[in-house]
Amino acid sequence: MKLYTYSIAPNPQRIELAIAEKQIEIARVQVDLKKGEQLSAAYKQKNPHCDVPMLELPDGTCISQVPAIASYLEETFPARPLFGSTAKQKAQVIMWEHLCAIDGLQAVGEVLRNTAKAMENRAMVGPHNYAQVPALAERGRARTRNFFADLDKRLQGSEYVAGDFFSMADITAWVTCNFAGWIKEFMPAECSALQAWHQRLALRPAFNSEQG
Ligand SMILES: N[C@@H](CCC(=O)N[C@@H](CS)C(=O)NCC(=O)O)C(=O)O
Image (spheres, rainbow, N blue to C red):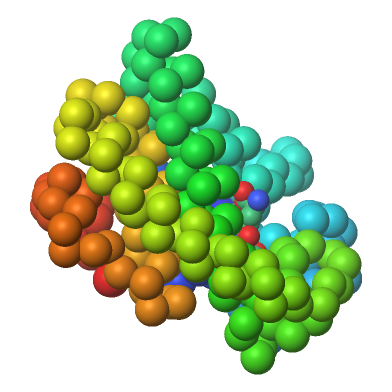
């Protein structure tokens, strides 16, 4: 099994953290996004969506998209579960993880992809080129701030994002909070539940080695 990744990028980080939490060994292949290696013919043949992370199984099957990879790892390596253990917990994790990805990660991405010079004409991930839309960057910034406030509210009444247990939802929320730094948005000091949760997570060995 091989993970195609670009370790510093946020979506690969979601899987890197899942792997670290599960304490499993998976070989890595770095795909240099700065050099555009995700758009090369060789990579496109394995993953027509031209994104990372992507997991290649020993039989050649290629699985892209974070939720699909995370689900495969969970089924294959059930120890140290990242989706809870009951049907209710699994649904809660999927719900919160999805909300963090859409309302958080996507919002920050919207700002970055619609403003960064290096992403001119690359405003969307994937095989097709799209021009930047400045209004989306403005909206993304407002959404990022709302994400912090909403997550703080959630964490005022919940130890972890999906409930009283650590999960994949915490991983995506954590990656989002750090990714926001790329667009100079930071967890507000008054979001004390969010700050306390972030500090608690930073104590976990898998998160300890994380930068930022
Ligand atoms: N929906 C995808 C998103 C993956 C994604 O956006 N990956 C970024 C790195 S964080 C990427 O591959 N970017 C390539 C590009 O910008 O062309 C998933 O869930 O895996």
